[in-house]
Image (cartoon, rainbow, N blue to C red):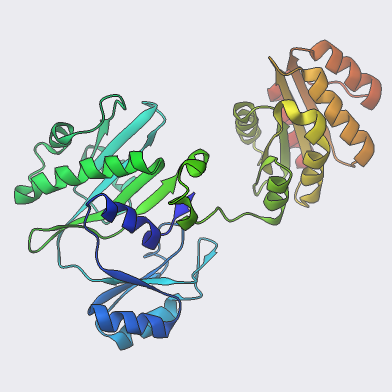
Amino acid sequence: MNFEEHAAKPLLAAHGIPVPGGRVASTPEEAAHAAAELGAVVVKAQVPTGKRGKAGGIKTADSDGEAKVAAQAILGMEIAGHRVEKVLIEQRAAIARELYAAVLNDSVSKGPVVMFSTQGGMDIEEVAEKDPASVRRAEVDIRKGFDLSAADDLLDGLDLGAAAGDVATTLVKLYEAYRAYDAELLEINPLVITVDGGIVALDCKFVMDDSAIVRQPETAPAGTPDKLTALEKKGKEQSLKFIELDGDVAVLANGAGLTMTTMDVVRHFGGAPANFLEIGGESYTLAKPALELVLANPRVKSLVVNFCGAFARTDVMTEGVINAWEELKPDLPVFFSIHGTGDVEAVAMLKDRLNMDPYATMDDASKAAVEAAK
């Protein structure tokens, strides 16, 4: 779950990281009133996505009148598919230096990693690509945590001057907040050193682990749920793990890993997946609503069904799909790959009831589906 900036920054403040004073406004008049109280401000679009500045969603204002005009320009904008319904009116900081700091889940080390760069305020992906050495990383052993000694090691040699101690302390507090709120990502960009030597978080991106939402009853309500398509909403209502994509080759598989692998194979052969749809061992009961989701997408031109059984039996999963196929009678090319526990029975059932033979490999089935979609 993503959190908009105005909802994320109080979490930093609660852990002792300074943030500017600010007010949320949903009308130009409210923006002007807030600016009258705060003085010179920055008017920021509040949407759960990045690159707001590049989209024109961040403007400065020196007076309440300018804040009103800026809010009028920003409210109602579309940024990455999100309509701007409110803005954050925030005190402007006197910036001496911009830094980058983040804690995130690292798929390589399979644990948290603390990241820091002296090139804050920029797209960190571009910075890392152009100058990898400028982005420092500290992998964290969760049994030991991340303390001031580890922070000092991360910052060693960066010439942060008198602010070095405060920056190190901020990194420790950022890690504490990351742990406290079950974050997947907690990022400050920029973390600034002000002209008077202070440290202030001028922006904050916070993504909470969806699986931990139930553990955060006080924090989670401030988050912004993912924007779902009509089909995704329907899938969620039916307890299906469904994500709609832009392609035309539908994918139906058991297990998230196998589903994503099948999608990768479709891409490998020049196709474009139309969805992520994983039904697993429950496919016997969920195959019909899953197939209905596939058929409801007008872009879909073919379907690859990929079952690999270990504990879940492929004959049970295949029977669920066959039952749904016979009931719905779709006019759609379908290509099966079936391997693992119960595959002999599954193959015989597929041949007997649908007069189809599965492909020898997942690659073959996916390639055939891509060709059929062309």
